[in-house]
Image (cartoon, rainbow, N blue to C red):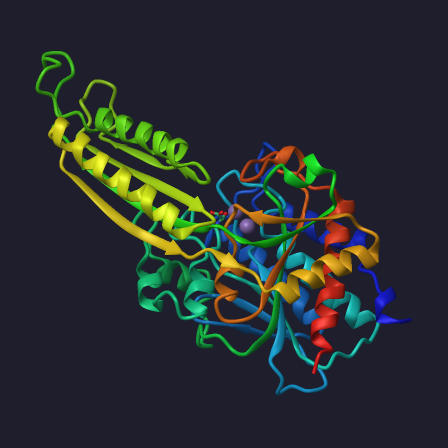
Length: 412
Ligand code: HGY
Ligand code: MN
Ligand code: MN
């Protein structure tokens, strides 16, 4: 059979996704597999066992990234890589990330059972903590791997309970010995759900993003004066939750004024969080994204100035941290064309678009040619328990991935 006629086993892909969906399953039909949790470990262990079933060489690096390597004829050539993430959001969906690990696994299973030899080695990956929900920032492990983030800084990131990423890697047994350091990559593809409404709205099956928006993350800390709510007059309060409320309005206002961007406050902690105490501590996050990095930076300048004015007015001292910034990722034109060409040859409709969601591919793109393959998200929903993509679309996305990886793995 010509490799052009090879297709993945859609049923087997569905079964793998369903098996992973049982790990951390939530009553609302989603998953909670927070980075480095017991559920993440269980899914990692399962993924490693599946890699061994198809004779892949399995390597775990210092950031817990799991690499499954399938030898090609010429082992000295830069490899073809594909991967995503097994970790999820709290009450997340059954497709975000995991499709990008099960898809390449299905590709390798297909090559294995058809005894297909490729020129280049193929490596598939689970990148630790892509979500950045439990330990900020997102894409931290691919960021360390490409040399953009420091290993020790990443190890010391803490969750809300003060646990560090390094300790939790140790606890689940995934703090590997291999250096978290890039090896030569010929081409990198990431299969992922779109997580937005475009493909469904346009009636297209495959998305070929031209790249990923820049992502800028900030952490804001306010200090107020706690007091009994009853006897304390309104005038003269240092109510930092009220100050934060005005700042949150500002985030939304600036995003609308600037346009061509999104800006969100997704996380908010209020202390002591008792209904009859005026809050004296607030921590909230700001996430700004745009195709133009300068546009996002300009928005932050406006917010920062306004935040300081609000804090001064309320007498609530403010600390603003630039937690993380990853540049916009314009993907490699040749690889994006591979995605569009493979879709056409397979008879799938496709859409050239942009990714508003962040992905590990953003970092890999900084050191190697990279591109992504999207499949539609029903109702454009993601990071929610009702996140849903059809099995048929998952299979089609994996077929596009198969053809792209084969094409790149046979280039010498
Ligand atoms: O933030 C994102 O877009 C991704 O889920 N880490
Ligand atoms: Mn994802
Ligand atoms: Mn996500």
